[in-house]
Length: 84
Image (cartoon, rainbow, N blue to C red):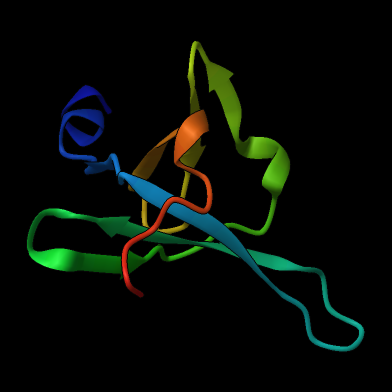
């Protein structure tokens, strides 16, 4: 299990916002829309069914995703995305 943890990718975007998707009679699903100023890049996370899995770590929100990756979101980065 320790090897698995070492291979998990952590993303630390400069800007981000949370997207919420919900179908009738289904529970909500959340994705992170993340951006970086360098090369004007963006990425949408694999998502998570449970927003309560996110937790505070100092000035960051740490949010594990369905793919096993983790998003490290600076509290000042919300809605601070690039041209996208």
